Length: 551
RNA sequence: GCCCUCGUAGCUCAGGGGAUAGAGCAUUGGCUUCCGGAGCCAUGAGCGCAGGUUCGAAUCCUGCCGAGGGCGCCA
Image (cartoon, rainbow, N blue to C red):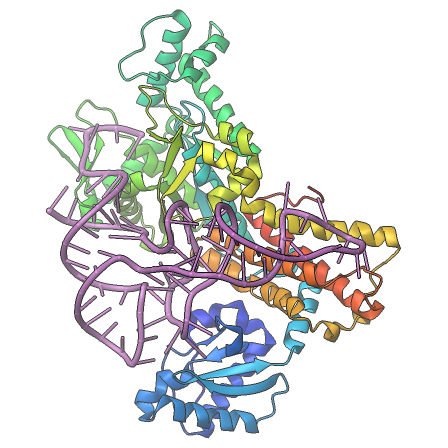
C-alpha cells in the first residue's frame, strides 16, 4: 500500500514536479517492500531548512515507528537500504539523519530542469497554478467612506487586497474586486453639511468634519449642487486617484445609493421575512442572527422607521454572489464583530456558510512627529495615503504595506518611512532587476546574444550560487499557492527578497559577460539570468510593484 | 466581564509540527582588474511566563502577564 502523503502536500505544485513523484513513489515501494502499511496523514516530503540535510527529506520513519513497533532510526536505515536497491537516477545519495529522517541528496539535474521549466514557461506560465480552476472569488476591500481622502491606514487594505487578487488570479481563480461606496446615510449627510458650513463660513454641525480638506474642497464646490452628492463624488475621486497611484485597481465601484434606489433593500428584507427570520418588537424590526451563532439579534429597522446600515449591506452582499461563488470581505479589526451577523444573514438567504469569508486585518497605527495620531473626524487629524506616496513613492509605500502579515499590527511612521526610504527592501529587489536589465544592455553592447535554449548545456551551472538561484526559483510555484491559500501576499514579499539575495550573490561571484568566461558557460549563465528575470517579473507583478530597467 | 488578533535579536519583521529559529536596519571588521558597490563577505545578540499534547513545539491546547481592537436601534 502506498503511503498517503499529507493532503496539503498533494495540493502543492511540488507533486507536479517530476522529482517529488519519483521520490514519493520510491518511498511507497520501499515501504511495501518492508511490508509496512501506512495510513498516517502526517507523512511529509519536504524541503529541509538546512542544505546539509539534502534536497528533500521525509519523516516517514518517525511517524510510523510507533505503529511499526520499531525504532525510527532502524526503520529509516532499512528504508534507505531498499531505496538504494531501486533505480532512481536523480537520487545521488541517501542518508539517515537526526532522529530518523530519510534525506535525499539529488543530482543537480533536477535543478537544471528548473531552468528549463522557468524559461519555457516564461512570465505568463511559470508558477501559474490551476488550484482555483472553475472557482470564482468576489473580493471586497478598502471601502472607506467617501467623506474625505484615504488615510494611510486604508492604503494597507488597498495594497493587500490588490495583491491578493493578483495571487488568486495566478492560481486560476476568476477574481472580481469591489469597493463599496457608502454614498448615502448619516455620515455623508454630515459631510455634506460640513462642506456647506465651510463654504458659508458657518459653524460646523454637531459631529461634523473638521479636516482641512473640507475647507479646501468647500471652495471648489459650485453653488447649485447637492452638497452630499457633490462631496461624495469629490471624495471618491480623491480616493480613486490615491489608489490608482499605488497601482491598486477595482473591477467595480458599488454605490450604496444606487443599490438602495434599485429597491434591493426591500427585496432582501422580503426574502428574510419569508424565511421567517424577522421579528418585530420594541417598536423595531429584528433579525434573529443569534440562531446562527451571533452574540445577539440585530436591528434591521429602527423604531424611528429608518433601516440600519445592516439592511443595504445584506442586499449588497447578496448581489455579490452574482459576481463570485466565494465572497470575501477584507475588514479592519474594528469590524470583526460584524462578521457573525453578515454570515448569519447570508445563511438565512440560502448561502453556504463556507461561501462567505471575512479576512480580518489588524489596524494600522499612524505616527507623525513621534506621536501616535488618532484618526479623528472632529479634530481632523490624519495622515493621507497621498502624503505617504508623495513622500516615499508608490513602490516604497506599497512594499512597506506588503512586508508583513496582515495579522500583525502595523505602524506607519511617515517620518521614519521618509527618512529610511532609500533603505526600503524594495530597492534591494528592484536593484537586482535593474542589474539583470543592465546585463542585457551590456550584452548587446558586446555583441553577445543568447543561443536557443535547446543548444545550451545547463549542466555547466555547478557553482553553489547558481544552484541557489535555481533552488529559489523552484520554490515559487509553492509559494504562490501557499500565499493564495493563506491569503498572505507577504509570503511573496519574503520570497522575492530571498530571490534578490541569491541573485546578488550570484551576480557577485559569477561573471556572465566578462571576457574570461568560457562561451558555453556564458550561454548557460545568460539563460540563468533570464530565468531570474522571469522570477522577479512574476513576483513584482503579484506585489503590484514596478520592475525598473534602471535605477 | 466576554470575544478576536498579536507578543521572536537593540529596532522593524519573517518562520505557524521537524533537525543548528532567519532577514533588513543599527554595531564592528573586510571586499580596487572588464557585466551597476543601491552590491558581496564576516560579526554579537532572541522565541513574554507556566503547564499540557507529541518521537519532536517558536508553531497546537489551557492558564497567566502584556499590547491593540470589538462588544449601539453608529457605520
